Image 1 (cartoon, rainbow, N blue to C red):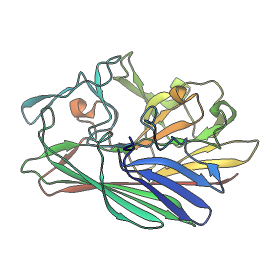
Image 2 (cartoon, helix red, strand yellow):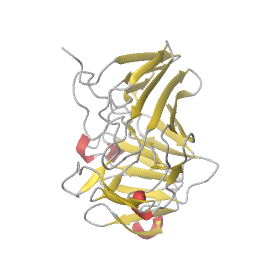
Image 3 (cartoon, rainbow, N blue to C red):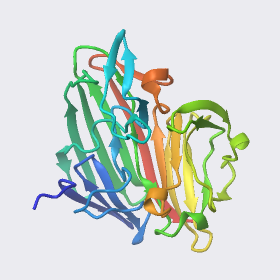
Length: 297
């Protein structure tokens, strides 16, 4: 039977091993010394809550699936009816082409054809590279191959984990100074100081029962790192990036076995607010880079 996750590709380097799938250019598994660093999903089952998906041409959500760009109004299908929003782009369930595959590196590509709601043409490629020294290095690169300017944003959706133990037992640390408060539809209301919302993780703190599903900003422009650590085992799972926004989700839909860490080029509903929205001119490209590695405290 056809695999719902498309082509399955396996990488190995040193103490690291990874499984990549072509549907959604997804990260299905990443281990260090045999221990899970991201919450895995079975290769023959649909992943839960966008596990490991590549998010283009926008991350997060667009209110009512509607936005204006260069004087025209566009309407996208709403795929999260509880919030009435268009969530996580257009490529999550697309079967990407395998452009190149080796023992420690794979490159996937797809073309987003113009359509109602997004009448632009984008070519995207994702490269996964595994090394013994640095862990998993990932690049999401997109080029506007159409004749007119296109609104664009990107992200990824891995769930960091410390060997699948409950995140309640783990400490979380990341250097964001501000958090974006949202309404009941998960749409932005106000950007406030992280400590004001009891979401200041610049010093590592036990996550406990705290629930988070928020975008953070005021991140170091030279780059930043999110660390999820288990004090008992000493295991740490880390994601490093250099984007201006970061979504953190405490993983209730996955039984709180992992924390979603999503480096984002823009905040939720950027197609409407214009905040940090990338506009790709014809022939112009953009790249998002991030890395996941593991170790001990």
